[in-house]
Image (cartoon, each protein chain N blue to C red):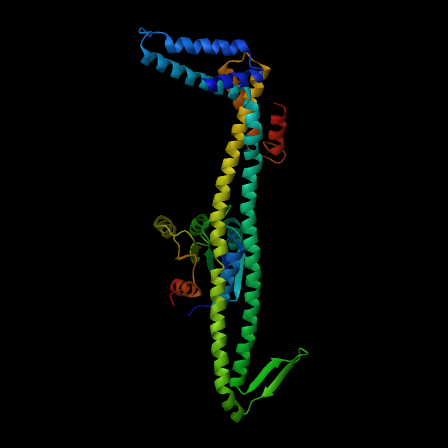
Length: 261
Length: 126
């Protein structure tokens, strides 16, 4: 009862007409007590009393909701439709771009390492043929003959170098293959982006439909439900139809529309 | 023995994957590797110049890999072109659809250089 009294006071503070409150009180009282033959039956009286309290609260909630429907739509749903969902899609796009940039840098490094290994392999091949060829500090190619005795002494070392080189080459190759994570995760993220975009479109349409409905009702209070649906459907289709450059529904369309509510 | 001078077309909308495939093909020994980023531009290239092998992703904008495969198989000039699908789509129905459309072989991502090498050996019967 106290709760109801508070609600009533709060509703009155928000300038809800007192006659509307009284009308509701009467309606709820009549609805919940009419037909009870046993007035002295405490059980039914309590039940009716509790029901009337609950119904009153429900009625107040509906009135409150109807009163500030516009403000409910504006910040929350509009923000979801025009800010948060597009932001989510942008952030997902950002993940693809960041991982792609990182993957490319890693692959640049791997390719540079592959080139160095190819130089090492050429050096080993030259040694086996008795002549080491490699670029000197000044960039000019140097040539050092390797005679039989020297080649024999250095052969274990060169074999070891060749083995390391093969292993490195295999590891680099594996790193390249592992970079496919960027493609695989990117494909999944693209599917999520597509889903988010569909959500964005549907939420925008919903906000638009609510907004137009309220607008039309305000302009023409006597409009029938069927007429209202027709007008709203036409306007939603007009604003949210197939998008061409400079046409259709975008952020500013929705902002303007809701600002005028 | 694979002819390493053959002209290869790598088709994938992800630049990273094109680069990975290019690198692996290079490691195998291929020297003439070209790229396209979707089925539509690949088909244009195939009609303009002669290629010996197509390595193609399934999921791409404009024209997905399966559509490119069907277009190639229904083109009198291109119908015999070896076509390897390289894709993350590993469901049985995808593989069956690709086989039905005339795919030469099917590689599931992520793959290894060895797998690519083996599949190409099979395609070219060496």
